Every structure is written in C-alpha cells, then in structure tokens.
Length: 256
Length: 66
Image (cartoon, rainbow over all chains, first blue to last red; front, side, top):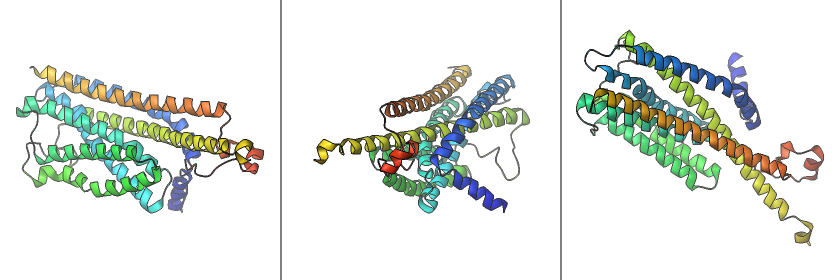
C-alpha cells in the first residue's frame, strides 16, 4: 500500500508543470541548506589540526573527496534516469540525465584538479597513469562526450534514447573507479571512509569531511533541480516557437 | 612552493568551478524565463495555458512534451 502510494507520487512528478511547482517551493530551502552546510563544513575544515604526516595539506581532502564522490554519484543518478528513459519512458528522465551531465563534468574536473594539486606535494608528481586516476579521467571524457551528443542532435527524444544507451554502457566504469585501488597496485590510497569494516580515518578529519560531503551533495541536487527546470523551460520555448510558426503559416492570406 | 600554495590553489579551483557552474545555471534560468515572458507578451501561450475558447478552436499544437 505504502509502496503503491510512493509510486503514485513519483508518477505525479511525470507532469512537468507539477515538477516546476515543486521546484519553486523546495529550491529556496535547498539553497539555504547548502549555504549553511558549506559554512559549517568550511569552518570545521579550517579549524582542525593538520595530519601528523601530511601536515595542513590534509585540508585538500575536504574538497577533493566530496568532488570525487559526486563525480560517481552524478553518473549513477544519470544511469537511473537512463533506465527511466528506456524502460518507464518517464517524461522527466531524459531531462534529468541531460541536466546532470554538465554538473558531473564540473565535479569530476574539481576532483582531477584538486587530486593533482594534492599529489604534487605528497607523491612528488602532478599525475600518474594509474588505474584510479586514469578511470576518473575516462569518466570526465564520458561526461564531455554525452554533453556533445546532446548538443549535436536537434531531436531531444532521439538524443535522449541514444544518450541513455551510452550512459548505461559507460556505467561499467563506476565499479572500476571504486575498486581500482583494490584490484590494481596504484599510487592512489585505498578507501578509508566507505569500507565494510567502517571508516579508518580519524574522527578529527571525518566530521569536516562528512559535512563538506553533505554540503557538496545538497549543492549538486539544488543545481540539478535548477538545471532540470531550465531544460523544461527550454523545451516549452521551442514548442511555443514551433506553434507560433504554424499559426503564422495558417493566416487567411496563405490559405487562399 | 609551500604546502599553503597547494591548499590555496585547491580551494580556489573548487570555488571558481563551483561559482561558474552555479552562475551558469542561474543565468540560463533567467534567460529562459525572459524568453518565456516575451512569448507570453506576444500572445503565444501553451495549449494548457490558453483560455478555454482558444483551446476549443484547436489553435494549440501537439508536441509540447515538457
């Protein structure tokens, strides 16, 4: 009963007008929550002591790790949306994965850039072609490819179906990124927060990291809802312009 | 280069990319709202937003999926 109610509520969101109404109501709250979480996260990040080995460079972790998590989470959101496009034909599913691609690319770029800036003082190099770094770079290229594909095709329906197939094929890269540090001998350290036996990271670093991770996640969802709303408006504009062109072609002069 | 340089650069890169992304999404939204308002002002409305009489005349078109 509860499950069917949840499905009904999810189906209700298939109506773009209803989605726009919901977005207008929740966006101010989401933006406010993001600002507060960033304020707390940044305060904690800059008041904690440095690591006994890394010193203050551990602070790079508070922006690098959340960006890296989001780069994978965004792609997972896109994969669920791709299933929504191909299986359920949910009208907002293709809007969702089209809107998420630039956000994913931006967060992956942050993860790559901050990782490089952390690698130089700690590893002595800006970049190595190890499994983790290379697979994240491939993810960045996949985001760029999906953005290019969506922009290259005029028909949004056709672009959405093609993108959905590519997203699902590319999803194989996500477990490769996650487990690359376990499967191969890499310069990148293994997971220290999301582990079967619990986090191995010290509490002093865990709290700022968690707050920054939640802040980045709420930022992503805020921007995603905003970008979805923009995409709905863009499609309405296209439809209205098409309607105006048809009405112009149906003037009495042209019919005669 | 000191460790402070790497920390400052990391936060600067993150801030620039995040602010550019937020600004781009926000400005895109404003531009689309403006365009919709202009269409509305010139009398072009969606089928569901049109008065009942207009819709009955069949002026609206199919294809507005969003």
